[in-house]
Amino acid sequence: MITKYVLEFVLHAKDSSPKIIKNALAEFGSDLTVTDCQKQAESCNYQVNMLTEDPTLVFDLCSQLGRIRSVRVHENHKL
Image (cartoon, rainbow, N blue to C red; front, side, top):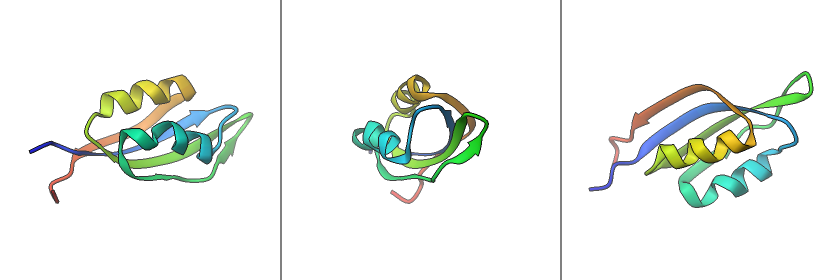
């Protein structure tokens, strides 16, 4: 049985959008949601929620888009 993880985090990014973030993360999981920007100076805070088998890949990719904050990771016990 493959372990899946629920990721909830804030991505603080410049020059991005929910569409860009979704396109970048789509192949790494499912149930992906990205909230619209909460403006903070010249950057935005995007709330990202998704289900994935490999949180490390997701965080590595997101670190290229911006700064990751407020991370919550837990196993999905529904599977």
